[in-house]
Amino acid sequence: MTDAAVEGVTRHFVTVGQRQIHYRRAGNGPPLVALHRLPRSGRDLLPLIQRAMSNFTVFAPDLAGYGNSWPLPIVTPTIADYALDICAFLDAIGLTRTLFYGEREGAAVALEIARRAPLRGAALAASELEIWTPQDGDEGTQSFKPFIPAWDGSHLTWLWAYLREENVFQPWWRKRLSARVANDMPTPYELHTRAVQFLSGGSQGRGYELGINASLLFDPRLAVSALLMSIRFPPFTRNGLGTEPWRKERSARRSRLLGAQ
Image 1 (cartoon, rainbow, N blue to C red):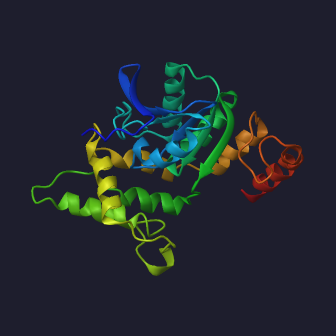
Image 2 (cartoon, rainbow, N blue to C red; image 1 turned 120 degrees about the horizontal axis):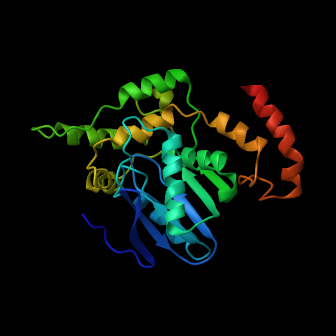
Image 3 (cartoon, rainbow, N blue to C red; image 1 turned 180 degrees about the vertical axis):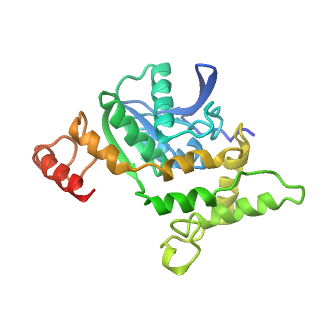
């Protein structure tokens, strides 16, 4: 299925090894790579792309196995595998240094890129980056079942319920009052849009759980610790980018973070 055209946003494929990665591009200015949450695609970031395109050249790739990007040839990929794939994508389109923005699982990938390749980034902004406990990881990975079409269409009923519940429970598999978050229920149109994203990619929902499970087993604190030890670019902070207050606070923040582990 082809999405309706969005003014100023173009769509492209780039070949990486034996695979193709799909991405959206828009705007002019310093490069900004935006990484989406899962199991959605770069389409989910269109509102952000349209706001940012007046100041940045935005690149929004579909993570491997989502949207129209081919999956990784790995049975159980990790966040590191997704990060290396995005680094290969950046090489393929000729980006050596960029700003990064990531949402949830996309934020985990962006953080891992920053840890592995600190010279790649000018700055990093992460939204809704989760810190999961080992218990969360075990529960979560058992909750995400393979998406297999059923003759009676029950897989579509499950999908609709999942896309609704992930918006109102945190984590979504704990369906109780203590896990309810202060979000409104998505509109039927929004749920339909998310379902179309889920189904319309090349994988048609197959393997949707792989990237999510990888994020459940990813500990961002370890990545942040390593990043702070050899930091080359600052995250977005209340003190701004690379300002003197950030430099003075870095050692104190590093000590507090390491002490909390």
